[in-house]
Length: 432
Ligand code: SDX
Image (cartoon, rainbow, N blue to C red; front, side):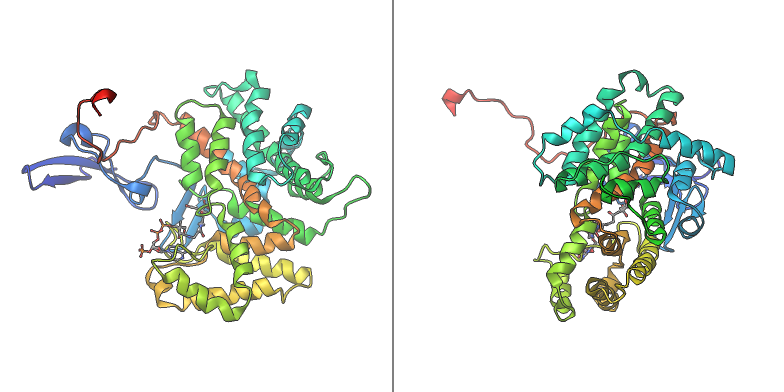
């Protein structure tokens, strides 16, 4: 920011004005620093849903919604998805730089030796019905983690913060796989230190104690790429929830739990599950027109799940990478004519030619194809959002750590536009 970079706010009613500084980032839009606005004008800004509000400064992820650009620590998502694996991206998001070979070896070892959970955690699952939604069990179990690490929760201690980050990244696959195994009545599978991070997750999800579980490297790589695409996404709803929870000084496990809870909503991370159910409800290409019509009808609450985005007003770069991954997996499995994939491709084609979607700049987002590929990888639909939470945990913890270290941050406490009753006196019930 140059010193003279500022805006003047003119109040035509009171004929007063105030000067507000303009701050510039490395790339992307400038921001108007309104921290003194209330003190200078006695007024608040009003921005439900934070459509025009920057809640913090961050160095982690950059999105250009008009250009369809997504950068993790400056690296384009397309290059990371092609040249890195998920744990490399975890290292990048947590430590700002891609690891050297030696650094990666150390990081993999550190994560690997934290993949087991305390054996008493398995008791938490037994309290649930077998048909409990996995997100319900995961919220409970991750929230309980802080009860097992009393002495390493000092959020001001970088060593404790790093250990919490490693534990969460390491244990999420184990916890998510356990939630699936519990729902199927299959025994929990212990993590295997000889396996890679994603291979280990697939093993805990699908293997049985009775025989070796042989994995297809193409499918493991596809799952790894799905996790890279979901790892972080700037100040989305769940990340903002984690930041707000963390601003009160809550422990990292409680903060990540708040992010998991927020992600569950169908407008956010729950969309991948909703897309599959929508495609199954559409069922046939001949019915696409009927659903497109419903999506455009203001009186119909139905929305085309997997379409639209608050930031991307051009294509979501992740959607294109996910579509390619989908094609790769279905081809590998000999399912290239998978009817659901064909239906999704046709739905995308029709929607992208429709004036409503063009005018409102509604494009497929990361969730539109992710469900189809996860289904092909043998992941039950009800587990899709849990997979999203597993991948996004690294983004949440990276933002939490950045927020704790940010000297500008203080407890988040927004104000409001009050529209309730003005002051009035209570009349005793005898008089009412
Ligand atoms: C994720 O923020 C992130 O980064 C999230 C995420 C991440 O990685 O963390 O990218 C992950 O959450 C992706 C989004 C997944 N959700 C869905 O696919 C659900 C369907 N999409 C919508 O609910 C919606 O598009 C949102 C929630 C994604 C965005 O909502 P906005 O930005 O608040 O936009 P809006 O609701 O104000 O919509 C603008 C207009 C509205 O019409 P008008 O009131 O202007 O007439 O577009 C319409 C909406 O009705 N619209 C849709 C639509 N999405 C928006 N109409 C039909 N179908 C849709 N999918």
